[in-house]
Image (cartoon, rainbow over all chains, first blue to last red; front, side, top):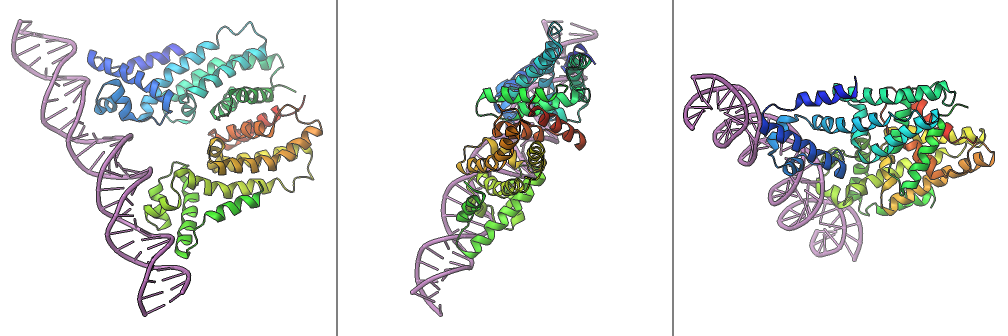
Length: 189
Length: 189
DNA sequence: TCACTATACGGAGGTAGCCTCCGTTTAGCA
DNA sequence: TGCTAAACGGAGGCTACCTCCGTATAGTGA
């Protein structure tokens, strides 16, 4: 599934009627802010309040918390996938490492990206597919060049990095250092 | 601070009166089970019910959720620290890796160990100190043997592994593989 | 322009968890 | 055995989750 197909999937869910559509969009925006500020456990009633709609409207559009997470997640995924383009001029290992670092930066703030990795939701599985599909060519290229060990899959690499991204560090420099150590583990010997 | 001093610290907190002491112990035990089963967000009212005491008693002994987490955490830390002993007969890198793997296994089930890494609580900071102090000799030995890169600290190594431990994997074999990749990143070139 | 109806709105209300407060109970001591 | 400091525990106020349904309105067709 491509990036475009994914955003089309979100579009499908947007209601037809103008007022409903306005509320839908306001909810997604409020949710994005709230998730970024308070994590995925942010209060849904608060999100509804910030969006200026009743709690009933939130639940009609997004029957579960996950449904709302999905909608926000979609936008973030698009950013990560897009970044994979235009890294071809770098050295194979560096291109892959740059993409993974970018993913980690993203994930460290937008924790939504991390929670999405273990959901049963078919939409989130598709998102994961898009993320993997965008990073896989970079991994394969680095493996073909003999710079990355041949026994890791893109799934391994992403989870490795996302794990470190999920840890809180006293100072940001340490996170970068530890991520570099992790990336070094991917190198071929 | 040593392991013994740490458990002494918990002992200090146990009430003097026999009935109070029984309740205290029952609460810690119930909390350990609940945290293992439901994560650190387990319901406190449920823990009180399982321990057979009123919610008021729980809050008198443990004014905050963190206070209860601390008490459970203490026991787990003792296990991890103890495991560092008796690894001296292995090769330097393998000894360190074994300890870190053990830590990861532990952390993957007892998620309490992970949440404790970023707490302001002085008790938890001491716990962290004990964990680090128990693993540090293993790291230093491996570095002295030239098997581990000299620019990582024990804090880096533990956080690296704990990050991966915190990720959920579809099948456990993948976690082990990814942890091995991470450990490989620690190797000297 | 108006009237009709499918669609959407939003909050009341039931459940559950958090935490505090305080009237009641009891362990340990003299 | 009687006294009291210490401990008990649940009622109650708060907030969040989620459902249900009476009310409002966007869009359409005459």
